[in-house]
Image (cartoon, rainbow, N blue to C red; front, top):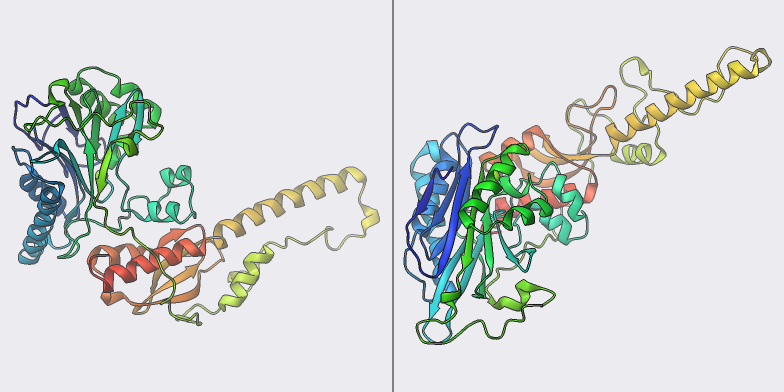
Length: 447
Ligand code: MG
């Protein structure tokens, strides 16, 4: 269960357990865990046949420090060092091009003045949770498209949990020579339990299940049960959990300074109560200031203007009756054609009315499915936003809503592959946000 883990014992200051599993779908485990006694981390690799595995292994190796760090900045430096190494190796080996990884790390900090506390570093969507007093609180913030949309109020937490694009990251190691790393310094409170995990865990388990499994006393057993439960719940991704207990004996640092005395055990927000300071990079901001002016771009074979398209969608009509056979369902029909009304008995009338109502509802649902979505795709050499669904639905072809102002050639391999398939959203604003993130990634390294 602990394949890929670096685990160097013992430590008098923490007790911990590590578990990792390939899951039920993937063939390779590209997650890596670190537990040295002073650094506890998870790296979730991505990209290429071997790339993700290599990127995560590089990060794990660099983070596997077995002594306390003098400051949280030293932890952030290790993450930046891992990023540089991944970028360099990817540049030197074509088979590793495009590899990347998340990193989420918890480390023991021994500051000569402030004593002992904890440092946290995060890039990507692996997570650190605090489990204390029976409550589970997420410490880190994901660097993902859905998190950006939630922060902007365009998605609810519940919608984000099931969003088809929830695996799209806005930050990862390996994408650029410069990486923004979020950092926190937390008071080390004896009795606190921390969980570092990959998305394969929290995407399969709800908070209630995680709380129940974290209630297990032994951190090794807790880590193993969490991973087993995520696999049993679907195991659609690699799953990794590192459970870390802060021990009683650790309350006082080498200078005799206790870093825990100021923490209110009953605080409403236990993470805020423990936060000494943060080193958070600026969150992703999505500005529409430099969006290309809306203009019509009609690639070959697509003839409907965006104005028509939006009017069709707003009216709930089929939109493109001129498609094959021109046979769009006629939602507005209120009597069977070709028969005098008096011919119908009330029973037949009721039956016909019911059939038409069902047909109307089905047609409306089809129109909604086909037209009430947008996707970021490719038209010629340009990235554009379409209304509709990739490939179209029956006679509803997608239509170009607006260009993004970005050439396909400017995208990296991973983004180009996604956009070529088409990345679908429920609303136009979400598609624009994603398009802007593509622009930022292509032209503003480090975003
Ligand atoms: Mg994963």
